[in-house]
Amino acid sequence: MVDGSSAPKIAAASSNRLLRSLPLDEYERLSHHLKPLHVAARQYLHRQDDPVEYVYFPNEGCVCSVIKTANNGASVQVAAVGCEGLLGIGAVHGSLRSPSDVQVYLPSSGVVAMPISAFTAALEERKAFFTHVMRYVAKSIQSLMQSVTCNALHSADARCCRWLLSMRDRANSDEFPCTQEYVAAMLGVRRPTVTLICALLQREGLIAYGRGRVAIVNRAQLEARACECYHAADELMSDAARAHVHQLGIRIGAVSSNGAGNVA
Ligand SMILES: [Zn+2]
Image (cartoon, rainbow, N blue to C red):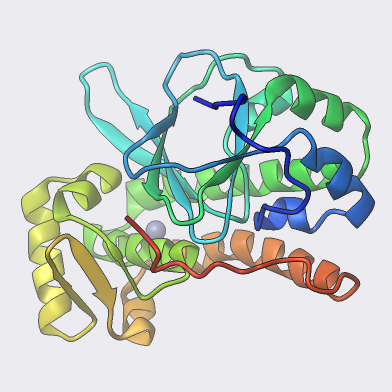
């Protein structure tokens, strides 16, 4: 998955918030184990049940879907991960195989890859990286619990609104690639259901879609239509953002924020 021969050693190339909220000396030391990686839409970073060789940290605007596939071949998105987090949290607990697929949704500025050996060694140092990763794992568990609740109790309409907002926030753009087929697969619902929902949302002026893209037209109304899970999941992003801003306060010019919209 990673072309180590051509990937340069980076000193400060990642805009991943979890990494950039680390103390500068710790970040710079870890950065020597990070490889920047351009990714493409629909590219798989992890495959379900396959060995995990790298942990991935999405940069600003890059969004990946964590997808679980059942024995009958049906799949559903169990999480979306952007620059607030990392992919491969099972490695924290020593899991050597991926419990799910991880697929790139919005490539934007790509990811940085960290070999499992370096990831494990960095955790064992029990420094800020350990604390930040553990905090993220705890938040991810909360988010997954929220997703279980959401899938069982909330309407497809409300879940669709939540999903659109979640993607919008991680993409950091009101417009991004999106097909009804993909939304249906991610929500685990039938495509005609998504077609009806999107038509209604467009008719009411909340979104506009066509040619494989969607635009959020009225975010406030879309939030009002989304289930409570959107705001609960949003806290995960916000916590990471707060830590990021805090660190920026003591580090000048640390991050080059690459807005999304720059999607394939
Ligand atoms: Zn919900």
